[in-house]
Image (tube, rainbow, N blue to C red):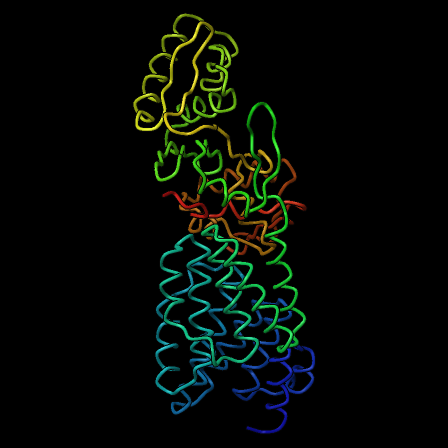
Length: 406
């Protein structure tokens, strides 16, 4: 490898894409094309970066399998950052196998971390944890160790293990000081920020207050009876009842939880559950039916009894009833949570990550765009959506599979 290629590679490793381009911008040999592609990716021009990397992969000779595999790994990272969730995973697997066979442990680790990050993005937390367990980061260079610890922290945050997340971020902070890459240091600082801003609201006894992630963790491991308005479940300790597919029942449970230790009037329950501003005997009859269904679902750890003016919730073993709510009550909050990472998303990628139909996601995006909360750019298949994050709040709890359900 000649001196210019070596110098360009070192510049890229140090997070200096312009310095790398100064050395190889006019060259069209395979190594230069690959380095130019990575530099363009660091500068945010993903379309040009993919073109250059594919050209480099074609230009490398039959005996340069490792170089071609590295190009595939670089393209996989571009796909992840640009939220191209349809990028073929098998290509990354094949590239990692090639790199393993040739002893390139740094790029093997990088490929593993890319796989874990994609699994986290689509909410497959268990798979991400199993994949990460196969990676030994002890001998990795500082930049790779930083990336590893950031992934460890991300999994811990999604598991609501805040002490483990904080410890991983401290290790990442130490590693990034050795790496001396400003962009990576900013990523570590951003990850720390998630632990220090409100993640949810606690509603109890007619008042509410903000909770940090560590507060949410403590609440969910306590003996409190929690009506979780983020995941639409009702829980106490190990008992968890999901009402995610039962919006009427969840509306009743939340209204009863907010009214505890008192009762909730019938007209309030009808308005919250059925959206009706007027009540008649048919509404009252329907309310009795739905309350009966809720009583059946909660029978192992709570009772719902009738009072003179409505209904009251009474936990069987808990001494307190609370409602855990989003930091901001926002329609289409899950879509906004993913867009809040600052990256540009296609509607198809959002649908994959959220497990929704693309049409449902598109309707949500149209509604948010009409309200000025998201913006789009590009056209047809190149159409992308993005929004700045909500300042002062974390959207972690709104991400796919972010809360433990028991």
